[in-house]
Image (cartoon, rainbow, N blue to C red; front, top):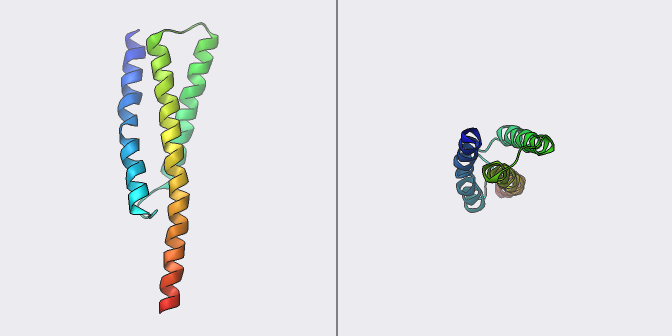
Length: 105
């Protein structure tokens, strides 16, 4: 029980930073300073966490804290996916801006 609580709190705390990162990606409109490699590995990690929870359910584990941590895994996965999508949008914007600069010079 305490392990489920600690896991839920850990995932919750990790997830607090993603809305900030998403906001920054939207406002900055640049992929500079972002690491796609880092975000993909985070997605893989959260996918593994989700798979672990699914396996635990099949083994009979459940309870409020169990499902709460599962919810936070899924939420974080979605948030990182949004940030990855914004990375590709911003990379396109960066390339367009670079092309426009090249035409001007």
